Image (cartoon, one colour):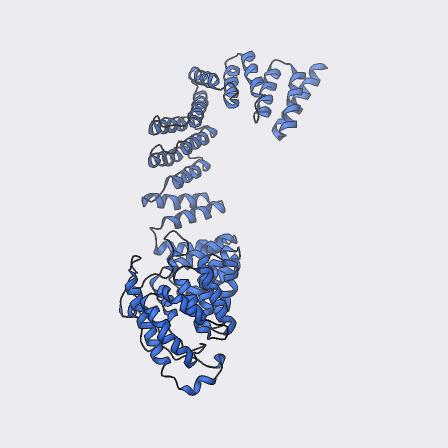
Length: 507
């Protein structure tokens, strides 16, 4: 049947088998009423030179009944929006009909088998027709048997057998457009994207071009890492369906994958003008601006999402990072606190990371506020690892705020639990050094130098204690050891300065 079919409401995924069978019955009966009217004189022609007249009656759902899904995908699958679309399902159900162009024919005896044996089974339940179709699909039989058998397997989700029978039909009748199209669709549905690409391309060559075929070709190419080709396919799909959201978003992702950020942002702005409530678009836009080091624009995107009330903790955490990168710690704290509130204390690790970043920028008051709030939200439900990290940060922040006594008490508690806590040993050494107790500072630094991952910084701090005591020879040896473990330019410059001072002292 030619011409566009009017759109129908979205199908109910729980549609019973009975409406499906009724629809199939109408479709098959319509086709075979035409088949049986063929003149007998046509029986001697070869399959490749004859065609089947089109069906005279539209399927039941063409008049407004819901279209049942055809091998439906779960909603979370990236192809679900395209595959489960009612219009796409209507076309797949139409695979059971007859097309007047590029179709193999049925000989009179094959018509009888179809009419008297296969058709009643298809009318009752397509799966019951499988044995009869398998018996009829002989090597010398019409490709329509193989094609119909493949379509039944496709409908029931048996993609391996569907592909096999579509390939057999095409071996008998290479220009069989519907078999070629369904072969490509079955390969995509099965997730076999590499062989699906040439199958989809062949469908286009045979004249089966439409937006969905181009979009599926683009999707398969993306899965195979062919982003430039996928971008071209998505552009072709948009010629057929210029307002399709999924095609535009797919093209954006292709541009991102090929680092064509300017084109991606232009498309994103167009999408956001039509869909300002789409959370993923604002997040993607922010990430693109970050890629281009346009942090102020990234902040605007995330703030828009925040004002819409759609910002998730991860996005708020990113917003806080951006404010901190722009040296605005108070706004960073605001975003981090909101993320912690939305987490409800379930993600203390995220809050501790944010507090660590604030402390690293010297924003001691903001870090202190976040630590207190995060711990209150988390309550007693804290892992041992998070508790120890919280204590380290509390001590570090207390030192930064000039609360030395509180800091050293926390650190000594930590070291009682784990005497080989490298970070706590370094912080304790810092406290004793600041408070004029170089011997205890050196003791802590020396212990930290024996902890894996803390050797180099501990040796440098221990060397600084020796420099202040004018023990230059020991300091030089320690700095050289540190450089062998972890070479750093600033430590090398410090080593050279100490060597110069030591040389002058010897002179």
